[in-house]
Image (cartoon, rainbow, N blue to C red):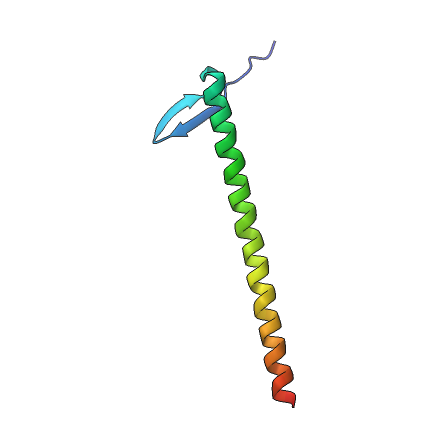
Length: 67
């Protein structure tokens, strides 16, 4: 049978295994992971929004120059 490997996590340069944590600690780790995903998604969305705004500013400047 295949041996199930544990999931290593590192906190402040200290490695531990997710499976060895208490349920409460695992819940906290899950919150941290979820928040990190949300931060990354927000940063991605901010890049899109900034690029879109810049494109509209450029378009407005071009239209004003045509007049």
